[in-house]
Length: 154
View 1 (cartoon, rainbow, N blue to C red):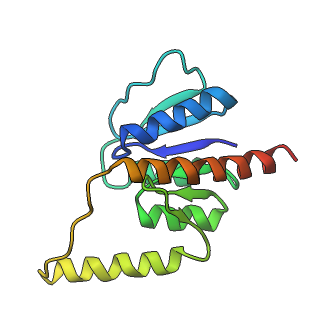
View 2 (tube, rainbow, N blue to C red):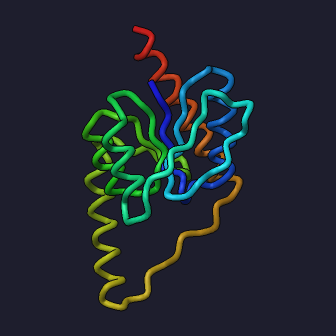
């Protein structure tokens, strides 16, 4: 079982929560981005993968290398959809879990909002990442990590 972070836009708070859990539980964690990222040298179970520049290269890497019952952290809904199909546990940085029961409606809403933006209609913006988001992420991440570790130990 591995933890994957779509790291180009992941908030630092999310990375810190994952790093603490990875260290405590000695779980391999991979940050994937199209630029070099700093990984604390003491965290030998955490590594960074740099993919070439280009749209969705990090997404493709995560989709190709992740496995059933891994955990992935991403705000990218199309990537989340692909990963959920593979049986990966997927969570966004604000603590929402993407699952087979929720991903279709989330993708549909995303496509609808993209259409509205394409028509030039003003669409609300996402609020800044805050303490409530961090707390929600930590709670969902802990629940999914516990579930993934339980499955991996069988």
